[in-house]
Length: 376
Image (cartoon, rainbow, N blue to C red; front, side, top):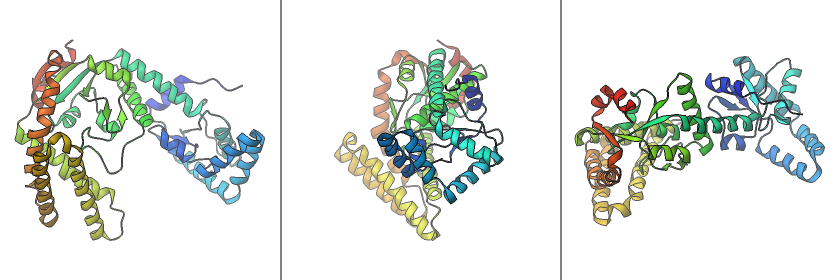
């Protein structure tokens, strides 16, 4: 008989960022885990695959025997050493496998035989995931949301950082929510996105907060989707519109999509030995990213407008690469904002006139945020 699942313990672990050791295979970990978890598997992907086949053909005892054969000798010692290091560094930590079953008990037993005690979570990953799904639905149901909208480049993400009770969905999704919103290191899994959202709401609510700011998003942020219950709640929520002058918006867009993003590419690819080659390769990848992002909106732009902006972008990238000068980027950014993003946003905003409760620049919204939050 399995031990009962302690939901209060799970809540405490997730609220307090207690370190977790996930002993599932890497492929399982990649599909979804928890913010403070590290993956130190009992079996790697190949070993798990072989044991799984043996389990289906010959049963559990044969599978356990094969697992002990595959994870033995130096391999076993290396993995135990890794687990010991985790336990030493995180004496308050816990371990888990998928259901809190054989893998986590085996890990715990091998550690105990080596003189180390590390508690496991009953129910494992499955119990924690179920807890967070329930918690997420409860948080959404019991909370009030105010949406922050505005044209591209108004700095909504920057303003969210200053607002009380703001949840940065794009930050959790690691994507800026547009055709130009991708990062070179990709996005979290759908499960990771949902887990992080649930924990963020849970932490706010633990401090008594009941009302939250969200950016006015569509159904998808890149390739991850906003939970349906939250989508519905957002459709019913009031909207605050951030308004800024065009030149301000060009500056913000230049920082987000050129200056900061090129630096991100340079940092991400900085592990190459040849620093000059690394810099050139990173810039070329960054350039290709911008040009590919423009290609993604070619049909909506139309042939003539796409041709103009595409040439403006090529000219800006050429000067940028040769001299480091960024001024020409302002030309294609202004064209893209004026000819593509602004008309598209204005059209969408016209569909929800009754939702808008306030309009203003960032300073005005900050000064009036409690009033905005309290309005029904």
